[in-house]
Amino acid sequence: MDINKLKILFTEEQIQARIKELADEMNEFYGNDEVYAICVLKGAVMFAVDLVKHLNMPIKMEFIRLSSYNGGTSTSGKVNAVDISLPDLNEKNVLIIEDIVDTGLTAKFLLDFLNCNFHTKSTKFCSLLDKKITRIADVDADYYGFEVDDKFLIGYGLDYDGYYRNLRYIGYVEKDAL
Image (tube, rainbow, N blue to C red):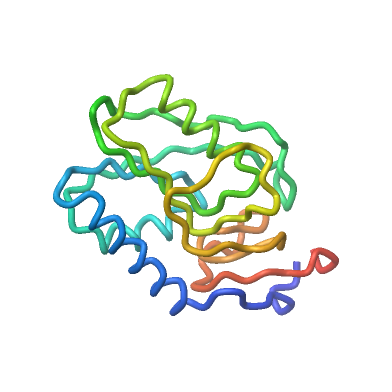
């Protein structure tokens, strides 16, 4: 992929401003209640770190790793739990932090897993990006940063074959440029 063909969709400033708005909503909802923030690796790590910096309540961070991509740009349609070890979340406030809800299969898998294994006090799902146009599973984020079209997105945690997660902005490439 030619990085020079990347077009900016959301600047660093737009992303950070929206994260602050999301954090304000969460601060109002949770108040001073303890929250277990579960970051879905690898894509959500940049977003999760920036988000929790703005949360005022006591936070315990957990990290899980799920995968539904074959590599490159295509999803396998099947969710693989690479590492999903979690502490006891019974009667806890749980905030799942994801980079993007695309087909919704990963989000549904994780929500079903939590519902089958724990009786949480609350479970909220937060995604930086919501690609409703490609949704297969019936799932919606409680909080999301931006709704996006069906573009292949790169940057700010989103990768192309493992690269470009470190970009401070989110860009896209036309499908024929991949």
